[in-house]
Amino acid sequence: MRSLLWILLFGIFIAFIFWIRQQSGPVKLHKSSVELTTQNYGVQVDKFAQEMGLPSAYFKALIVLECSGERPPKSRYERHVYKRLYRVKKGKRKRYGSITKKTLRKFSNGQLKDLATSWGPLQIMGYQSLAMKIPVSRFKEEFALYYSMQWVKNTYGNYLKKGDYANAFHIHNTGKPLPASGRSRTYDPNYIKKGLKYIKIFEDKENKEPPVLR
Image (cartoon, helix red, strand yellow):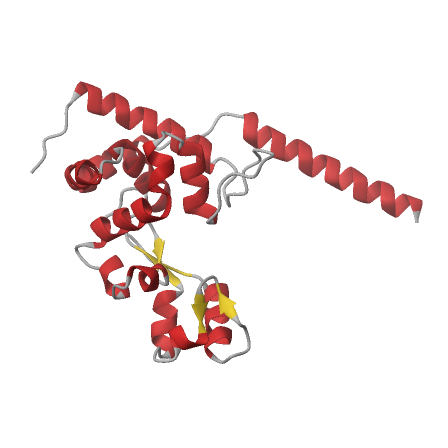
């Protein structure tokens, strides 16, 4: 019994050391994704960010993290989200966030899959369209960037206005601010660190080349 306990403790220790190294070690940035983001989204991001009173460099960094600047961006189907939404619709689960059985009563299984998929350059989950009272297609079509940025403004724009980018990235990736411990719970442990570095890159680019708004 004691030997099993020691093995367990040793495993936890190794995992902790691995996590520390990930947090403190250098992160790999992708210059090509920065250039793609500038080329594919730069002008639009600058325009919408100015209209919304939010920092464009944050959105460009977020685009690098979420879709590597690709246009059109790929979508990501989240099967576990679909299962939860399906259970809510069938009355086997009370709610998923603010989504209830009543909310989903008119949705087909195919439409539920759209709600369980992340879309657009910021990879916004389809079900976020429900609170915005817009069709999920708005996150897929040519206006995807605008509506995605609008969702960010509505959801955690107050953090961006304060320049609290670490919490902004954490909310975007996990749905919640950083915990009191400050330990990130993002899927990629370096998600925030990369994001902050990309912001600096885009800010430097903007200072050298003021954006041309159209």
